[in-house]
Image (cartoon, rainbow over all chains, first blue to last red):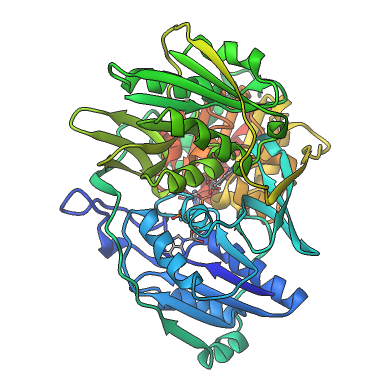
Length: 247
Length: 315
Ligand SMILES: Cc1cc2nc3c(=O)[nH]c(=O)nc-3n(C[C@H](O)[C@H](O)[C@H](O)COP(=O)(O)OP(=O)(O)OC[C@H]3O[C@@H](n4cnc5c(N)ncnc54)[C@H](O)[C@@H]3O)c2cc1C
Ligand SMILES: Nc1ncnc2c1ncn2[C@@H]1O[C@H](COP(=O)(O)O)[C@@H](O)[C@H]1O
């Protein structure tokens, strides 16, 4: 079984977020980057598939500075990594096209992506790639197994309900948080990663289909902020809660 | 503009987001039309609900369309769009919309933007959406049509009344399907139903270390402890305690959000609570946009004080 996993080196929403001087970007100085949260689950799931069925796991990342994230994947048990050194910016099409360019030259059974990027929150790249490659797919998967020449995927839908579907191989799934517990990177893993292949794959992007006009802080702010010392604030909270007749 | 809204239904009921899509369509169509599309094995009854908000309704029915499947649904939608070319295709930002929309966009070779919460059409189509889990917003310009958008639920609630004509088309997918629907799995029920609690103490990732104290507070207030998704994912609380779009929708008298950032997927499950109080150490946290009262503080510091004040008062 050969599994490809798509990972993004992404700024954390916990970073200090400041709008850039051009009003169209996020000030990069304050951003801290790591593997996109959802993609940790994707890597873990891919490595588990290999541990269960044998084969190879390959990580693909699009971005000029994604080496740290790819090395983390290698340390988690991924066998080799492909870096596409371009900055696709806001347009998910460009990222998907870059990934498709890598996948077209490879054989694979399953492609796993995260559900969405923690910075842009698009939830697009995985399905766009699947559509471009004409692969069957399922999103927000919380249970995954291989049964014969099919993948059984349980996908999360609204309100705590889930949907069970079967996909013919090869296919693509995007995984939802909670599907597994991503492993920590071990010292042994880091050592092993040093001898693994990390190759660059060069592509030419076709130009974006959406354009950033403006980035800004959302306008609304409803809450009345309670001020004072901790005991004062606690006292006010008790008043508020008490006003609903529940104490 | 000719704006198509792809409706959604489950267990014989229209998802309210479908009507919101039509409200959105009516707002931006200009001298064009708002047209609802619904796909299923027998969708005549549901079509009339949509007709009340649309200039036209397309009911695409067929025996192979009983269950939602992105492959069969996209296939028949594309058959329609071939004959009736859209300028804009709208879908809900839902578990179905997130699959169908990008598939349609690739097949229509057009730009796509997800989770849209606002739009203007003067000087080209510009749409607004949140990024960084609600902490920032971006306006995006789309330079060509058609475009595909998914629209956040709960935003476009106001609309006009129309009386669209329903056209039924019987269609079958043109290709064999490679994804097969098997079944819907019901949520597991736990010992208590948080949606019935009058007081909810909700624990987010930022309050996970204070879970024990939160439980104590909840029991003092005769309420229940609930959690945001990361707290449930990490196994600290049972699945049925999750509040949000993929968990429960709650409307307690008091909702105390501790260390919860306020991502929309969480907010959708609790925004209609009578009194919402948020405690978060980050003044930028989007939870303060839905809370009635906010405290900018460390939960670990505030919670013991709050507990002792509640205990005092109960004496
Ligand atoms: C399809 C889909 C469905 C989803 N469904 C749900 C759902 O049903 N329910 C749900 O909750 N989420 C859901 N999510 C996840 C959602 O997007 C957010 O990731 C999640 O709600 C974040 O949880 P959180 O606020 O606890 O954690 P975080 O976003 O990590 O926020 C933690 C917060 O705690 C604050 N904090 C940290 N330490 C402290 C401290 N000591 N004192 C005070 N504050 C502190 C931080 O400032 C931060 O604001 C879904 C996501 C997707 C994509
Ligand atoms: N630059 C990238 N490189 C590799 N994979 C990516 C990249 N951006 C997004 N992805 C994958 O696509 C998923 C959805 O991302 P998005 O569409 O940006 O929300 C992520 O969880 C990743 O698995």
